[in-house]
Length: 277
Image (cartoon, rainbow, N blue to C red; front, side, top):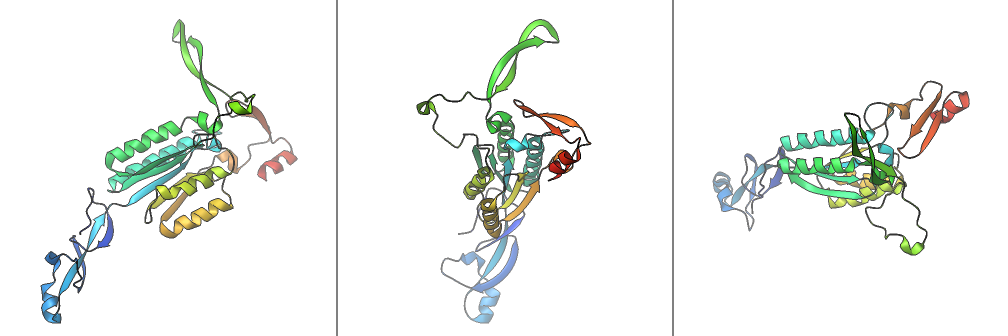
């Protein structure tokens, strides 16, 4: 039977059916559509031939976006996670404009899988998932709460503002919650786990974009990437902050993850060498 799809893309797929571009003729085989008979070659060769066509089909595009703890960092401008979200959204818009399907695997301690879907519906689903992943609390293992403070524009009125705190340690082993995909994962297995799950979303022949700072890349991750690249087109974007590439001018700088604080000391030669290492 001819391959059919609701959306036409710009990638040619070879199949036995009716399409726009003639490819070649070959001997008739059981199951071929007799409407594709090549009567001219059949008459010349003395046995039945059918025409084969190329049809343009949509191609699955999958965005793998890292929203782990290290992505919620910026020395200036936007967080790396925000840059990743913007890039993922741009890839999505370009994908549906090209007539292809957009899917995603987003990980920030848990994993959210979006099967490739065409049109605006697929893109809006991606944007909603990116907005949800942009909340740093799950990735950093924080608990969101509410505080009351005065509204500077309306004196005397109290408004709610989000606050974050680290969860209190459990005092009993029996009270510890069962582990799940939504548990925070800040170790080096985060990227590896995401790549292991990617096969559920990225079928062979997909175009895969990987957005990460690759701080959790390890040997297992590299093996999964090599396996992925054998059957898919893989493009990786490393997202880094300028402060992660070059040390700041000599000095002592306060840093925070929103809960804990510390300092970067580049005043002395030893501190700068340690930073560069």
